[in-house]
Length: 272
Image (cartoon, rainbow, N blue to C red; front, side, top):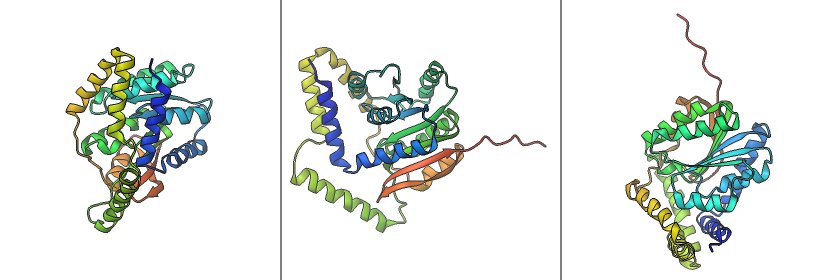
């Protein structure tokens, strides 16, 4: 038997070691939803992993519902086994943002919820993987999925421009000091060690989970391994082009930022 709750707890613990202010970031994002949306909103948990955002969001907002999407079969399975569907309040979708068709199952899930569009999109520590062209396309697609007045919240490492070399050095220096303090000095489980441990334990507890790890490795083999880290100006421009007319940071520690974007009203057609 696999203790899925144990593995979700270990996931949260190793993630927090990389980002000590992780819970503060989540709280900031949920505070924005409380201020800007009605209580029965529908949110997309984009690149959800095991559903960290959905878990916290649905606990805080008992009338809300989420659609949780990720490409990783192992993390999705972990989320599904620990959270379930919470009486229909969470829908799980396996899709890669590298494929433009990822929007189709989201639209289907919205139809099943009786909603034409999303009220919110939330993502953390994920979109920096996307090359600029893919990030721009994803934002553009979200502009169609999110209703006017809806919001997008992205908590991520959003880089300073290359011209701000001193700022980049400050950000990198902070991350280097944190890594030295947390991992080099204290030791303990990091991202790679967690993956090695979970595969060994799951295969021993349920050999059928081997298919999940094979699926994970297949997608990892073709995924770009270099961080893209589009700079702030790229995010702002791509979101503005997608129809989000209010975009700014609501939280920041060096290049670890929480970006809020509010979808504007559709433009009136131009009459000649």
